[in-house]
Image 1 (cartoon, rainbow, N blue to C red):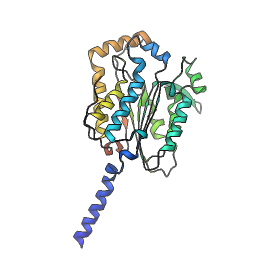
Image 2 (cartoon, rainbow, N blue to C red):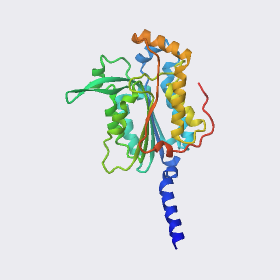
Image 3 (tube, rainbow, N blue to C red):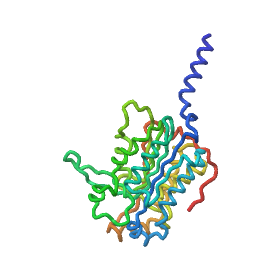
Image 4 (spheres, helix red, strand yellow):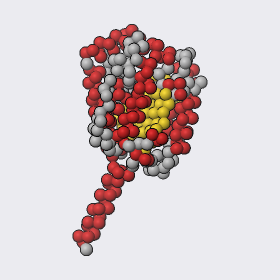
Length: 304
């Protein structure tokens, strides 16, 4: 009897601990990807990268196709907003519609791929650095403050409020934007769901809060989104390993002499800054959620 009881306990605990590895399937996995390359912003950068106007569309298509194959996700579970669709109103409406489609007990993967900046926004008379994401507008807003006031751009805390409508049990959020590391507190730590929500979340950011996030040399893709999509598709066993590979390859890419030369020239001409171009992706995964998401893809995405 003692042997049977011991075996039963071991079996029970094994099921409890390995359950996250197999509970979620492609059928109950959903993807939301949004990206905007506003024409006024593109015009400033196309001198340095000829394909920059297509980068946002390329990123969304590459990322969604990668996770679709790696997790066997049905096409109807994938939702995208690209360029002129990715306005403040479009993002708000899109996330409401997405939340209505996603049942409890599901897994959600999100990609927010935008230009980004940091803004000093007073909170209770205290200046706070807040991550601001640049959404689609035909013309450049007069100021950052006006862009936020008139709901043309969005802060990380506002985006967090929209994401809170999604009640999935597992949520992975990737943000590819300049200074994206500055959004970690608002995106992950300050969620507004009910206190009894038992789900898990993880965030992957393309750069530290004091760093820019860069495109590839030809401008065809955001660097981190490209590397993450490639590592998801190239045989990484888990999403955690895919992130680690993407982070290493992003850092390595930026360290090359050709990239440093072109990037340094661009920073000087556009911002009058002389500094080394550095991009270090960061992750915040307090429950090891990324480790439990197994990938089954074996075909590498073509490198750009």
